[in-house]
Length: 316
Length: 324
Image 1 (tube, rainbow over the protein chains, first blue to last red):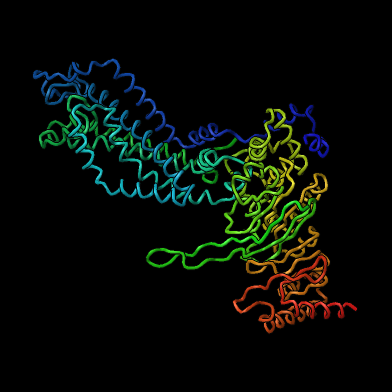
Image 2 (image 1 turned 135 degrees about the horizontal axis):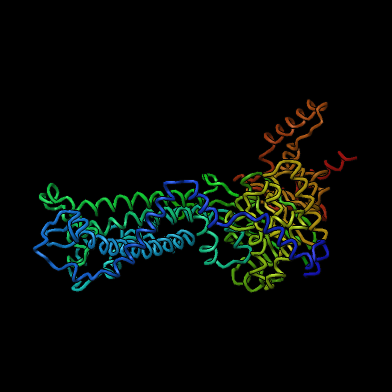
């Protein structure tokens, strides 16, 4: 059969190298290249990228050098030390504990939980939505009833109850508990786009080309909704920082001996702190605002990179 | 023996309604059609939109769930998924889609698109595979530098030729061409059709050519079936259909072929109006009480028409008298 093709074409194995090289010269730039060009074209996003990546690296590494139990010891002498005093660049809280060190360890904990939560819940939600949307019929029906049931549960209350009845929990268990409840929104979003994509001819063409259905879902349809996935994931990362922070603020997140952005913002519960001791809560609040803003800038660039008609970067 | 035999194929879609969402009725997209495709021929399937011709094509390639009837290939009924897998059916039967843009995955490079059936059905080495893809591109008249580009970088005609290259990749025996050129402009239509004919001659492929454009069908097909409301109304050779049409629907379709001869514009217009008038007044003779076409009756060895036998004979006599 190979001879059959050779008969009708002047191309033979001898030309393979030369033609491959020619084609590579004309090749469209890779996805990574396009994303980088897009970042270069958008200065605020480029700065955001450096800020977010630099900050995450800094707190992850910095927290390793901090002895947390020692840092969290109450030291009455340093009670509400003002910022820029000896040993306390950002001041101290009611227990005389350094705000700067708490901020570093707290950021590590909060961002770690948000990252873990985003990875677990988005992965699960994306798979759920893709499978449900592609197979439709009874599979879709069953999976959507599970979704409806999960949506019906009052999320915050369930998390509070679970946190209360589990005797010993830490950042890892807390992430897993959150993950049970945070995949639904993603799954519904992905399902609706999958329904539209799986009706397109290229999915049918892959099927007649003999490609396995699972491969069609994850290799054909998923790349085509990647812009939606990227945007949804970045935005839910920003949102997930808020999830842990909000619960810790209410007192149901991480245990009080584990600093986090939420426990630090919870300092603002006290009217005295709001007016007089602003340094106890303001840095954490500012950090969350800056992080979330920067992440949404990055999300915008990724969305533009994924959609050829919106690109601003030059393709050289 | 025919390459593929379609017997009493039915594709019905249920209509659900009422409180319990039960099946109350069905849309009969394809309602009992029978025809055979011979090796190496181009079989035309013609009809208006919604007549079920695309559904027929999708059933033959295995994309549509068939309600009843059978499609025999190498003696096996391929409406069953297990039989399709057993035969590696889609290695031998491929499809060219109407919309060239949506039928090529926008996230894949041309090399991966054309190589997809090769990777699934033939286990070639990387170099053999790339060589085959380059040869295929050459056969459909595209340069090698298309290899690492994406579908949106090509024009409509080029994209459709990439679709043809993908369909030909595994050297199939039958290609379902579902309105392959109706989205293209006329000059590009001719180009793609000529490539398809060239490939047919070179590889001995059969086409099931689905179209509503009778001019294109005349250029491509040796045997033609006219489809209307889910049933075949007339089946015959190119000569039977174009020169001796018997069914009123076929005549109406033929009258609708545009003619560029300006000097005879008035005459054509009058002819079209006459055909339409006859269609409106005699419609009930050609369809039964529920508005469906009659079963096919044979009027000559190659020619069948969906009419009550008496009327068919009568028309045949009229037709031959008119010829003399």
